[in-house]
Image (cartoon, rainbow, N blue to C red):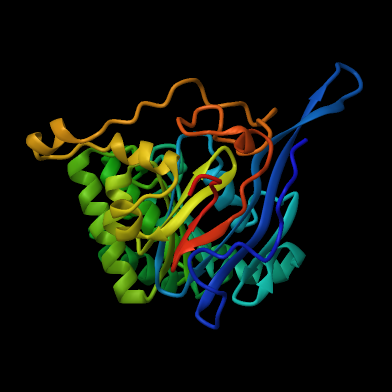
Length: 340
């Protein structure tokens, strides 16, 4: 029978200190699955996020990577309280967000914003750009009408858009311009922390570089802290200070960006990195390619023990029975694997 090892909070690569802005402890997000026509009854739980812990320091970027459906976006939405988590703590600047309600939560939300994945679906097509960017100012009752218009114009200039186009609508802009509008909206209330939920995955490669450079410039200018969610490991390495690898609702590995790319310890991380193309054709032919067999298990019925054991090329009997402990295998390098 599977047993779970649960000890001290699973901080990512460092102890929680005064520099920690966000501290996520044993976060769980289960979505109930119901059945029945007249009377709905719960028959199972979809374990989208299952007991993960990590922290983010002020002014840094933590990249959260993994396959589609592993729980990355759900984690970000739980942090921002768009989803109410099933269990765990989300401590933002010393305050547990799960305990806040009403006006207290509204005031805290001014310090946390989100940049969404789809620049086409995340903007209201019936609203002008001026109204879209200025909406957070209206919701939080910041400034007069003229001050809001000036703030919108300032934000458009900051993200590289002409304020002359503020009266236009989203359909009149390209994908990259729309994402700049989303960035401007996130900056409107001067937040400390921004969740970037795959902000460049829907854009062309050339436009991706522009948006990534814009995010880095804004971070340097305003002292922002990012949780950067993505599945493109090349992008994550470029923008992140530390990288956290996630699989089926669990954390697999976490370390400094260079350490995790140069010295991956978990077999899942090695498989992900082996799929990233190398521009040098000689090295590309020589390197080992790790092909994972089988399908990703369902989060409705995750396998016992290590959730990755059904696809792991080096799994042993212990992996099938015991959940691996989250431990610091090397200084600043954390991993959950019996074989490391």
